[in-house]
Image 1 (cartoon, rainbow, N blue to C red):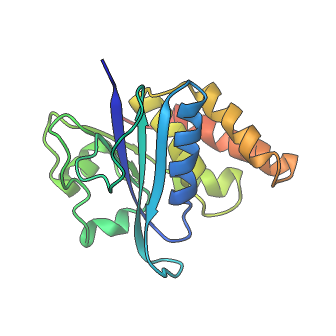
Image 2: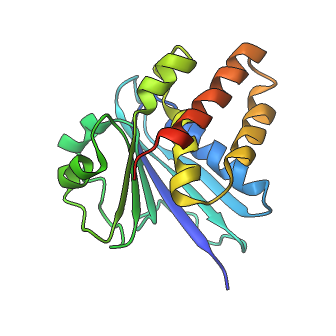
Image 3: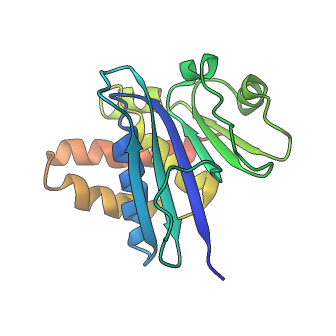
Length: 190
């Protein structure tokens, strides 16, 4: 039986959500899955709200539209909660992961998520500032996703990071990103 997982990302331009959506897809591809990763934005400037999408399936993916009923939602900026219904279209047993300093209980209340929904929080921004030295929470949130959703092991995320970043960044920056993913994996609260 086919297993299709759909992820919707809510972020602001400049936080790396599009890169994270692609990193998750590329990591899943290392396991032999079929993938899609796509952004939804216009001529956004840094700080403008945007969405990105990731699909992962054990069988070829035949749909090519935006994700309306995500299994998993990632919120990279909790200030979006004032203007965006991040739980729109989610099933009662979905997973939502917040980059926030809120507790899972506080985050659940902020979006009025049902008790059946898994809610997790991680201070991905704090981790990024401590490791990468930039407000770029995308790599840490992928580490948290690996732990909470169990789509792939953290070691596979790190393997993909090395492959992707090895061509573009210094070893110091690669190591900082690896550390940020590891820390978020360990520090995420469910």
